[in-house]
Length: 256
Image 1 (cartoon, rainbow, N blue to C red):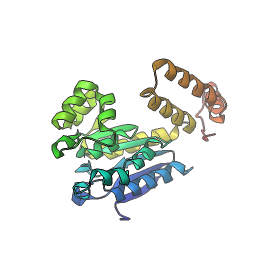
Image 2 (image 1 turned 90 degrees about the vertical axis):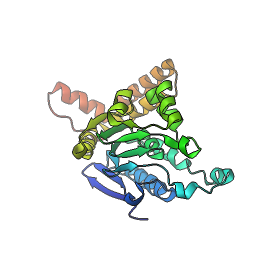
Image 3 (image 1 turned 120 degrees about the vertical axis):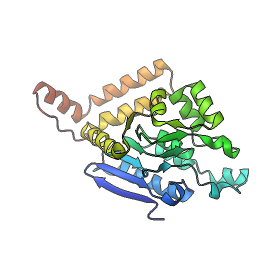
Image 4 (image 1 turned 135 degrees about the horizontal axis):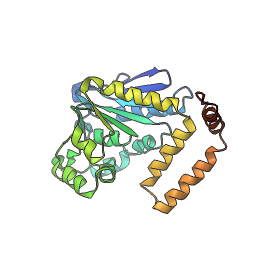
């Protein structure tokens, strides 16, 4: 079990790699618990400023572990409450970049949508094909995909179970960047290092505002945004950033 998630750090960037290649990185309960614990650990680590989540070239994650779920009853699903750990991913404060190649389906697509930026290999394929198994998405697929693509694209993808190419996903608004297969992880790492060099409090609060945009009216969102902007004027990083701009030098951000 210890090898189902591989971890490493590259300066201020932490990387978590899903490592169940024999089952296309299927997301078992144990793997998800391990993954959430790893990501929360990085989120609490003062030396980490950005995170990357990836799989391998063949699959980011092809979905949930169906063998684990096939014989469960409705009450089993209720008592297991396996989606509670997904809420913990949503609460991560630091930016999380998904590096996606190959299959990104079902729970894998939902996991990518829990990230903040999605970098896709040209070979990536996105979809929510749960309808083919007699179920529907359960980790937010019907909600997040609809917010990302709009009603009619989401209906097409979820009801038919069809897959989107990386280019289709980018044009529809699901994917941030598409790059050649040999560069997808390097591009995600590049973005994460760029984020790590930014003032941490600004990145954190900007992320928070963007996530709130899907839950608030426009006016409530604008009010929330302004309050967090004002809050940042109490930070040392705001003073340093503006002073460095005036003095035409590179700022040194401390996250305070």
